[in-house]
Length: 122
View 1 (cartoon, helix red, strand yellow):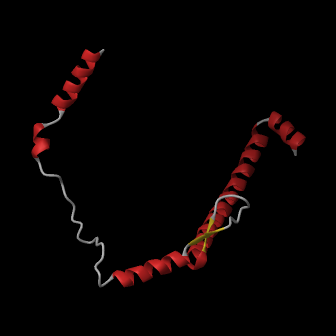
View 2 (cartoon, rainbow, N blue to C red):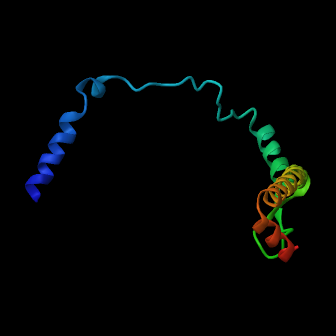
């Protein structure tokens, strides 16, 4: 078994390209990112403090579950997400009801057994 391990190591090392080892790494242009300078540190610190104060986590709106976004920034963002989810659920509910009615009508139209089932469970 140890001999096989050496063979596998040799195959892995031999399969890597020799050219890849000498080529310089590909670098992206990172000039649009900056860490900040001493002149902008107070401005950056106040912006971060404002963001932290506006995005908090408060008690869950669904009972005893995970914390929920709150604060002057987190609250409106969470409300917007909830509103869009509610609109999406309403749209799906309408489509689901239409599909259920179409399926029910086709069952009744096709089979007497379907009519019997619908009469029993209606």
